[in-house]
Length: 461
Image (tube, rainbow, N blue to C red; front, side):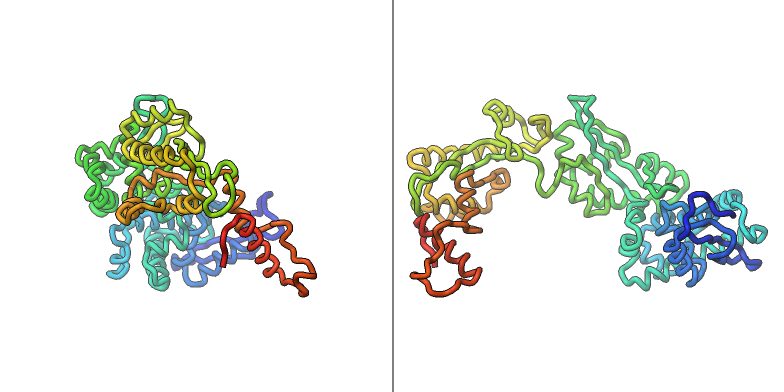
């Protein structure tokens, strides 16, 4: 095959040929073949040096999206079919331990033979030669997994993460702006294969189950449904969907249903289900309406540990204040997900009302004189104010409502805290009469810090 116009001076011509014995032989650097980057050729050649099976395994696992030309691309497709079948094993490590056998059905072999492109030694390509290359690739896979020492799943992740998602169930949740009453859409899919461009191909889970059942593929059905059944055993929400068959159908959901699903995504993922949700949702830190407490927005009246700081309480969304009307609307909702300022956020009426009552009472008391500098530091550290009993301290630390609270320093106090971290106080330099020595940099910083604490009338050791 001649060099194409897209090839460069660093490209190397390479090809695969069939020997009379039916074995594959990789050749590079000759006068004919398909041009590939030299680094790609080096990888492929190194793999084939261990045997045709290792070479085909590399093509199927690692060279997914690249342009390999019709000949190497054909053998990559054959290897990709085998790897797809491997992903359908319920326990691949056990299959390897007991002698891995991967069936190549007669119709699959016939399709591969019919699709074969021109190649050196094409006259030696037969079903037996094809099965020999297929079995060698399966044996190479077993050998490489065993030598990796981490099991099949770790092997796939280490070689190409795309393959880790093949043969797996996906749960998808998306916004459905066309239905204000049912603003979310759910779909369960199954990744059937990797496309010729290296992309995952999804089919609806219901269709995949029907296809596996029609083919009497028990292992395929089990690999599909076991993760779903395991998750359903710990989730009444998912169990109802499985028992009713709704999990196999596209669905339109209310905010309440979507919220139940989103809260359980870590459980689904722990059972081997892949979950795709809107990018505004983070299960570790969901977007929420929170009660926001701000201490020290304005300059304190006086200085020192007992200096009084202003104190305010306000509902906020990601740091953005909510109006009284927006706040009341959220307290009137049942809870779950709510559309606030054009964004879907988590709302818990009971916890927000509990926090609001508590901190409004603190705010009312603070208006009579403010909170001291030390009390402000305790609040920023999420410690109860002085005078609280030990039981109140433990309750505050363990309260689930604390997740719905933000406590932050206001503009003035934030500036003071920043200066405490990096003192820049002027006037802190010692004159030669006071100190007849040159301070080292860290000593000069220490003097600045002590000078700042002196100005603030805060003690230091």
